[in-house]
Length: 265
Image 1 (cartoon, rainbow, N blue to C red):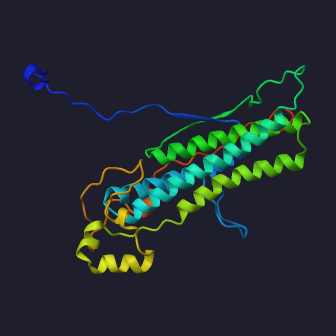
Image 2: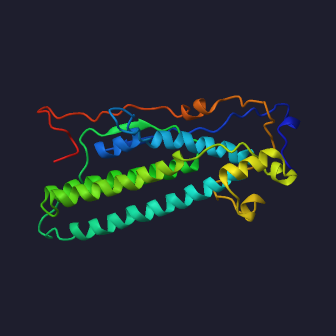
Image 3: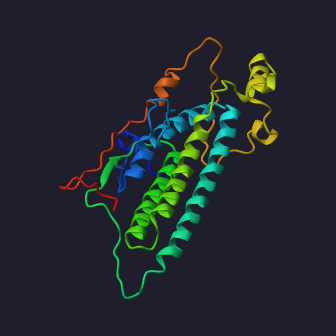
């Protein structure tokens, strides 16, 4: 006999599930990737991981509303995440070769910051977590590169080349997401071939048929909610609200008593 909460005289009133998530970073290089760079002094701004998370929340919301262009972007960004992971793994493999030259008689422990930064993580999108995993990998790569240079297994020039190469992988990922623009169209618009669909085609191009039909979607795509935003009707939150929905955390790694920065040699 199946158990029924209401038949026992009470009703369950469960809230949403939550878990406490924190991220620990050991290097300034990874901290800068998290925070990004504001525009100024003739330089363009670079979004950080927190900005990437806000953009992915925005794309996910549009995919949820049956926007096929948002689904296309989710597929493209997932492919970029996968290729970025491969690029970082390639750097790690080449770093392993350098570290393997360490004599067996010499034991060197893991290179960690004596005062790492621990950050609260507010992420609602699986894509955000996939990006966090890449940042953790990059932080580990930088720590090992600094150690390789410190133990004379690598010159400073090579160390800086690989540190910059790893950072470029993540900045390229974030830059792709930054190119996203809201199409404001649904699959129903394409079925009826209305002006909204025609305008979207002119601005954003043709869609692959399997994406247009909803056959091919990212494995992390949300369920589609059949809700349409009619012309002249506004969403409850603006794009600016969406982009600011991820808390921005100022990062400052501590200094040693003598003024030397931890995390570098």
